Amino acid sequence: MNFFTNLIRRVIPLNQKNTVSSALGLNIPSSDLMSPAVSLWSDMYQNCAPWLSDTVHSLNLPAGIASELSRLVTVDMVSEVKGSPRAELLNSVYQKFLTGKKQCVELACAKGGIILRPVLSCGDLSIDFVQPDNFIPVSFDSSGNLISAVFIDRLTVEDSFFTRLEFHRFEDDYYIIENHSYKSSSPSDLGKEVPLDFIRKWQDLSPVSKIVGLKRPLFAYFKMPYSNTVDPSSPLGISAYAGVCDLIREADKQYSRLLWEFESGERAVYLDNSAFSRDRNGKIILPDRRLYRTLNSDESLFNDWSPALRDGPILNALNSILRKIEFGCGLSYGTISDEVTKDRTAEEVRATKQRSYSTVCDIQIAFRDALKALLECTDAFISLYNLAPEGDYSVSFSFDDSIIADRQTEFQEKLQLLNAGILLPYEFRTWYFGEDEETAKSILNLKEENL
Image (cartoon, rainbow, N blue to C red; front, top):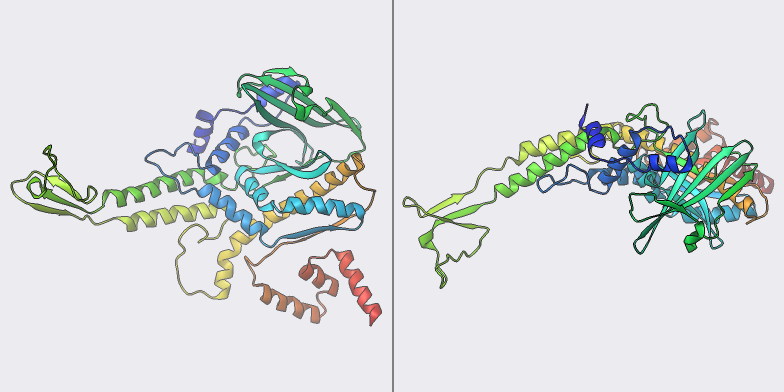
């Protein structure tokens, strides 16, 4: 049994899953391994890994890995909704959400997944993302899609702790949303159920809402496209660094050895006590306490301490660990390690980036699918509250792929395919401008009519 499994069972307490299950009368089938695993990934991301101490320092690799993956996934990403007055409202809400897309993807990379959902507050429609710490999955469909969940909202008022549980589920032909609020004197205890109007923020919420006609839940689950190695039977996503927790711990330990090597090898000059002046109390006055040390010796007045540093072997070992972490996270060598420098052809550079490219593409596909699901449930949300007239919409996506291909080179390649008749004009427009197929065809038809 490895360090990771031992740690989550021994150190990190389970979340409120069992308490919530009892309060709502649910039988939640989620694994007992996933909750502590998410807690560990969160602690690592926040630079609070349980192995860190006064002697073991942090490289903060989890946050760096999640941030770099998020940057590669979202760099120059463009997505837009068009088609009708309803599409204009959708796009307005959507674009506001996309301003924080990097943070959203970063949190998902760190914690395995994140829920996106529309919310209406004071008449303002917006998109919220819920981290795994604040929702409990209840059930999945046959394809592994999350269709029922409990969302946890916490507030502190003076010495009291309030918790609201928002339970979403399908039952017969209805989509049911239940709201329950609880008051406790301890943040670790759910406490006793109280009316929703105990908190002004919750007073307008309905205890039970039944909605007819929904085909999907009013939320979308964006999860990492990695196989779940923590619990293969669970449909939940896992962190981008879930498989390298042991290696990250070893990297922190090796980094701490490097720091100690420099600290312990600092140059020092040992001088006999007689070489220093003294204060009125007879204490030796050192001109620099870091450099000079006292020495009681009859043999030598002066000794120089300048040991040879062993930083080379330590750095080589650290770099080897970092390369293993890169491999385990699906990143190309040199992303966080010191890449071996040598002259390379363009094809060799392309090959070294292939692993990152594959990982990033998989995450982009998962993010795109989650955003499509988000727009579907936001569209249904707009209908529920009559925020805009009925209307169709289409969504386009464009992701920058410069991680693997030079944009100018790819343009020339596609232009050659276009001139050879292999690539159709509308396909070229959808790639270059990020237009959907229908828009690209209509523009081309319009240009032909004007010729």
